[in-house]
Length: 452
Image (cartoon, rainbow, N blue to C red; front, side):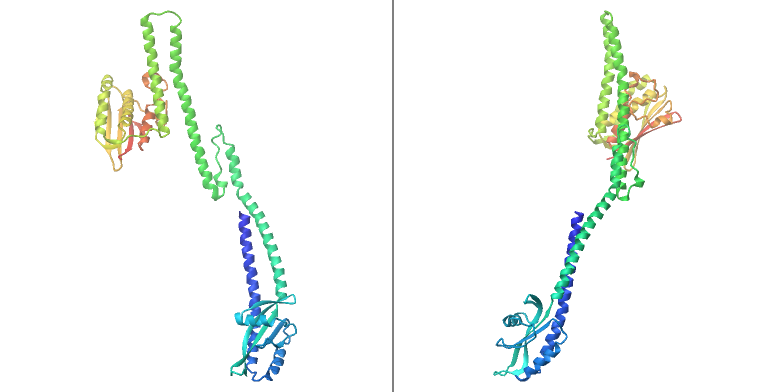
C-alpha cells in the first residue's frame, strides 16, 4: 500500500510537471505567433491599393528573415494565396475555417510529416471593395514545434524512468523502515513467548522501547502483573483447599476404618455418625463459602439493593448473638445510626461474620461495640472488640482465604477460615472497602460503604 500510494503521488507529480512544461512551450510559441500576427495586422492596415499588396509581401518577407521554422500564409476571400513562405503549404480551406471558428486561438497543423502550432485570423486592409467595405484577407502564422516535441519526448522518458526508479527506491526504503520500526514488536514477541506459568515475573523493558509502543508494553506488563497475582492467588487457594479438606476427609476415613475393625453397639455407631455429621457440616459450609467467593470473584453475585436502617439490622443480629455473648460474658453495644442502599441478606452476613469473629476473640467481661456513622457520600460501620491484638504483619493477610492468626486453630470450632474473605467480597460487591486495625488491645474492623 505504501509503494502504491507513493507511486500514485509520483505519477501525478510527473503528469503535472509534464503539463506545466508543455504549457510553457505553448505560451512561448503563442507569444511569438501573436507578435507576428500583430505585425501582419499593422502592415495590412497600410495597404491602400491592390498594388500595395506587392509591397506588403516584400515587407512581410523581410520581417521573417532569421525566424527559422516560422511560416506565414496570406489568402484572399477566393482562397487564392497572396503570400506564402517556402514551407507554408497549408490547406487554404483549413486556414479559413480556423479563422472563422477560433480566431487567434492556437491550433496544431500537420504538414509533410511535421507538426506546426499556428494562429489564423481574418484581418482588414485599407483597400475598399465594391461595397465600400474594407477588403479582408486570411492570415495564418505557424511555427515548427518538432524541436519542442523532441524535447518533450526525451523529458517524459527521463521523467517516467525517474518515477519508476523513485517508486522502486521508495518501496525498498519503506520496507527497510517498516522492518526496522517493527523490530521492537519482534523483540516484544520473543519476550512474550518466554512467559510461562513458571515465569510470570517476566516484564517487557519499557525504557528501551520506542515511545509509540511504550504504552502497549506497559499495558502488557500490567496484564502480566494481574495474571501473576491471579495465578499466585489461585495456586495458594488450591493449596489451602487441599490442606483444609484433607483434615476432615482424613478424620472421616480414619474414624470409619477404626469403626469397621470390630462390631460395636448401636450407641457407639450413633456417636460415630454424629461426629461424622459434624465433619460433613463443616465441609458443606466450606464448599458453600468457596462457591460464594468464586461467584463474587467473577462478578456473578450482584447485590439486590434496598433502603436499610443499619441500626435495625445490627439490633436484629444482636438478638441472634445474644446467647453466645452471654455464654462468653461479653456485652454488645451499638452507637449511632445510618441509612444506605444495600442487599439486606449479604450485608447481614458480612456483619454476622464480623460479630462472630469479635465474640470469638473478645476477652471475658469486655464489650463488643458497633459504631455507625454517616458522611457525605459514605457510611462507616465499625466492629470493635477488646482482646489479643493482631500483629502488624498479620493485618494485611486477615482477609486472605483460610488465613488464621494462630496456626494452631485448625479445628471446626474456629470456623472454615473464609469468614473475613467473604465479608471483604460482600463489601467490594457493594463498591466499598474494609480495613482492620489492632492497637492497645482493641481490634477494629471498619467497613466503608456508599450511601447510594
